[in-house]
Each structure stands twice: as C-alpha cells, then as structure tokens.
Image (cartoon, rainbow, N blue to C red; front, top):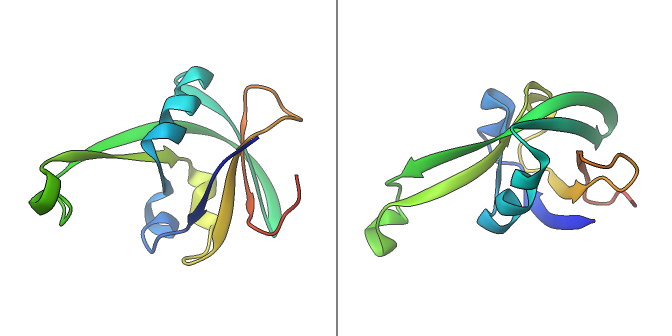
Length: 107
C-alpha cells in the first residue's frame, strides 16, 4: 500500500534518515517501536527501521512557528542516492513491515 513518494534529501545518505509526512509517520506508528524494512532501490536490502521525530525551528518556523519533522531511520537508508525518487509503502507481502522502493518499481 503506497503511503507516499519522496525525493531522497542530501542528508539521508549521511544520517540514514528519510523524511516522511506526519500522516505517514502516524500510519507507521502502528508497526511499533522498530519494524522490518525492505529496501529495494537497485539492490535489495533488509534491515530494521524506527520512527524519529525532530522539533525544529528551520526556515519554515519563521512562517508557522516551531514544528516537527518526521523520519524513518535505518542504517540501510544510507545506501540511497541523493535526489532519487522513492515510494514509501506498507509491504503487503511482508505484513507489519515497510518497503522503500525506487519510484518506478511496481509493487
């Protein structure tokens, strides 16, 4: 089940955190503290991921005040390339897990 499409930020290959929307974070919270991650972007990798939140006062704060950024965090996400388009999905083939696939991959 597709949750969202994302562009990999310049920071993801450095810190292993892929930013996601608040709505996606809310959906993933039902998977628990940590959950299986299947990464299929050129090469398939399996790992464990967790949700991460960061209260922030970035440029957006000047307009709307302090807010929260949401991330999926995993060592495997360091293998993503900056600028790549990915699909963030609940994995129907692996219930209770998350898949991150290349945007052109077919589920």
